[in-house]
Image 1 (cartoon, rainbow, N blue to C red):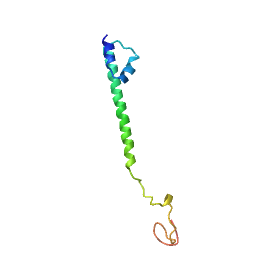
Image 2: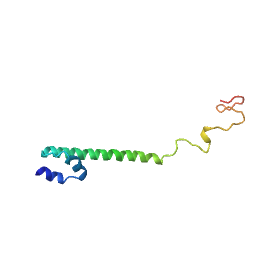
Image 3: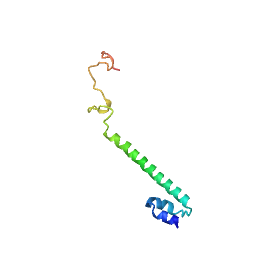
Length: 91
């Protein structure tokens, strides 16, 4: 019959999804096959976009410069303020 012939020509992934429902109305079968194909393409493009976005972050440098200066600790200078440079207080 026409539906069986159509199913046999489908890609294996679509055939697997549609084959269990045993649809014997040809227009319904075509619609279901088209929906499965579109869903598969959408899923594929979604994961491709996620992988592309994930890969872009690997080439980026650090957003800060560490220079071996462990954890943001500052050297104790000669008693000068870090902000204004005056002696007698440290902010």
